[in-house]
Length: 147
Image 1 (cartoon, rainbow, N blue to C red):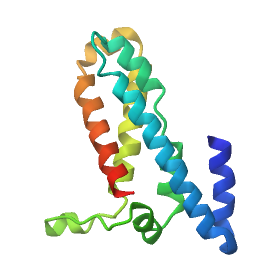
Image 2 (spheres, rainbow, N blue to C red; image 1 turned 180 degrees about the vertical axis):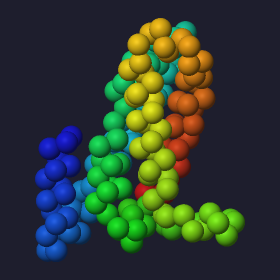
Image 3 (cartoon, one colour; image 1 turned 90 degrees about the horizontal axis):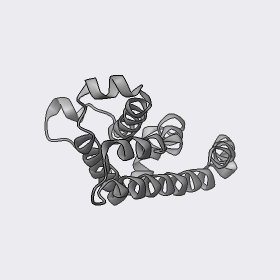
Image 4 (cartoon, helix red, strand yellow; image 1 turned 60 degrees about the horizontal axis):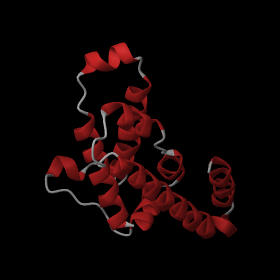
């Protein structure tokens, strides 16, 4: 996946292939979202314990999301998301359109980090994996609807 992303970013650098690069990056982003959603769905199986959930979290990916976030300006992000993200309050309207993508990246990175902690520390964190996984799943579904 990373080599595909790197080739796509090369397309974005050239003006003549920028549209193709943006389309390809969008497709990679969608594939990554669906992959993560499939992984998260396995955590809803019957009798799944926290250890299984942590192993699943280790496999989450956000490379395409990071590429979208770091290599596209806000206009391109709006194109990828197909609609402008609007906020109800004045202060929130000042936020960038990329806030959902940055939240996605943060949530995946945090879950991966928690899942890599030593067992002794994991039991002390009292982290509710079900809530974190459910919230990440909801966010992925929202983003997929916007694409």
